[in-house]
Image (cartoon, rainbow, N blue to C red; front, side):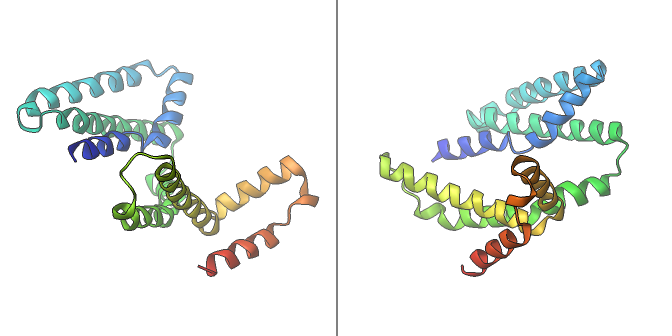
Length: 186
């Protein structure tokens, strides 16, 4: 069972990548070498100091735990740098990025907490399909909730589809009614 906790901690490392990827590109494009050096120094320092100080207590788990802590520290610094560079208030960032994610993430976490005990542990093709199907259901459901609750996402999606296939082929209101009827059917 310890391997499951270890893998969960390691998978959480990538949860805030939506901050670090664009922020690191901005820092590189603007040649913010000092800020990049700070991030490059913070991560290994936190990682190795944490491991050296807790390995005797947590053993192998300390590697995953301090990888997560080091990433969270660097993501916080990336977010601070990005918001400072863009001259954007933190409230605006939370209203446009974080707040619209609350309902989809709550749905996703709820689905996975509910089905976690029912997912198979044995290796087989059928069990793999069950796990992939369950995961796909959760992700697609979260995307649908995100689409229905975020006017910005609806606007971007409509612009993308209109640019891809033309306005004659896309009827936004028919698709919205169809999605609402599918969701209300559950």
